[in-house]
Image (cartoon, rainbow over all chains, first blue to last red; front, side, top):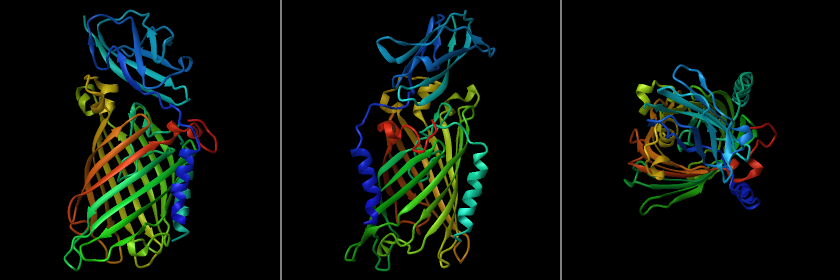
Amino acid sequence: MKHLVLPAITIALLAGTPSLALAHAFLDNATPKVGSTVNAPPASIRIQFTQKVEAAFSHIHLIGADGKDVAMGVAATDPSDQTQLIAPITGKLAPGRYEVRWDALSVDTHHTNGHFPFTYQP
Amino acid sequence: MFFRTPRLAAVLFLGGAAIAPAAHAHAIAGDRIFPATLATDDPSVASEISLPTANWLPAPVDSSGNVPQVKSIGGELDLLLTPNFALGISDGWSAQTARAEKGAYGFDNIEVSAKYKFFEDDDHEILMSVGLVADIGGTGAVNAGADSLSTFTPTFYFGKGMGDLPDGMALLKPLAITGTIGFGLPQSGANPYTFEPGIAVEYNMQYLKTAVKDYDLPDVLNRLVPLVEVPLSVGLNRGSSTWGGTVNPGVIYLANKWQLGVEATIPVTANDQHGVGIAAQLHVFLDDWLPEFSQPLLGGTL
């Protein structure tokens, strides 16, 4: 009987609650693409997440090779797709390597963050 | 023995509480996701289920010259009580059979665990935890190898991702090392104390895609984590000083809310098993499936 404790708890957890499509918001892909070299300065940074994110608590920063922040507009989700976070680049980009730093709050309140590089080479 | 082990655990927990980090439900440090490894526990705490974990292996040659076949199936449930502290319970059932011999079947001892994550460095992708694992004697079938007395194993868990390597070594950034260092303290005076180190070296293809360079590989490849685990054990006294363990090459498929791992288990000595075995595990991140477990049960925010 004592060995039924684990299966009983597990079954109760899985059967007693409806499964919802919630999870952490991880980066799925981005534009500019992670690690890519682009020959024109991008007008924005777009990150596709694996789950919907809350734009008000999610951010995108762009750091130049000199370690200074590039001016960015406020990040917002795509009106038709809450898994996409987009931030316009308002500063001028010089040729060089850039690092995108992001943090996101998924709609089920899990927080994630990360960073990735891209290079602008006209 | 009963007094020494809980006291050690309490000291470790209290020491770690002073530098308690922000928490994630998965084993995450910065860009790095440490998958749940099969043979050596990962370095973080989470609400999660491993069910089933299945093993098959050829046991050492017995006195009749046979090679018994050992099959086992088990599960583990871990629940976050606070953002950095989790309790777990696990059990399994095994069958050992050999030609023309009576088989041995039954449950393993129930195992309970407490684990506290005391350090997280997102920039350098480092996680560290301490815990206490208790194998509760007398709760399993003796004829299936379960001990009638308990064993307590204080354990240190660590994980380090290589994402902070220089850009000239970018393709090595998806590498990570996790490991455990445990000391088995048996209640029985007949059993030896044991030193139980374990290490896992893993290459996370998802990290390559999302933090280093997106090569437009098929999604199924981007979700793979090839790895090698090496769980070892050696007796420290009472006439036991032989190393045992396995080298486990394998791969984990890491989805958003679950993962599936398969490994070969290659014995380091013939004392452990007669040949190569197989281990497989389905692992579910409870906090992503069930909203009730999206936050710790006793409060706090992830």
